[in-house]
Image (cartoon, helix red, strand yellow):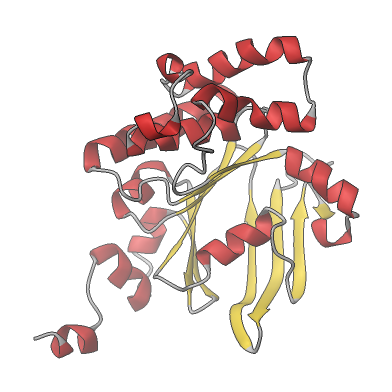
Length: 256
């Protein structure tokens, strides 16, 4: 594989839910070790794009390539193996409330039988240590704060040492201090592990803190790709409106 081959490539992706088009000719490339942020307003197709990249949805047309291989061409078994190589951290943490934090983190290791079962406790403690939760191993998720639940979900996403982690709305529901701490953790994990992060968010402070590049969607189409600095000086009104937090004029006038 060429050294410059992106870890993820999306080509001319179209998606429909029934007669409604959700994604329209979306293309992008994500480099290894990059923190790539997908953003846009509510209903723009951010989460749908994430689901395609993780193999949870099949497109109407177009291709999604992971390590150079179109996942649409994979058999069911091959797709299952591909999913072992990605981590997913859900907006709410996605933890099973009936299991301890440690058991949640161990779940992908046991499900995929990736390591000897005797090694799992040590791996779990290591992953929890990476996210600052080593003392929470025996707690149930209900005993955790919102920020701790997100960190525990991230530890589980990292359990099998995936080269890429998808994170859906990491800062949602967190106060600014906890959100900033999570941003710093993402940067540190990238530095330590070389993980590629694909993050879906609309939180401006987090975008500015962590993003190497962004993809902005609007009504299912790509409005902009590039760095935050390039976005803020792009001259594209909708992009600058987002970064300047300007409301739609007609909505603002209606609410007066």
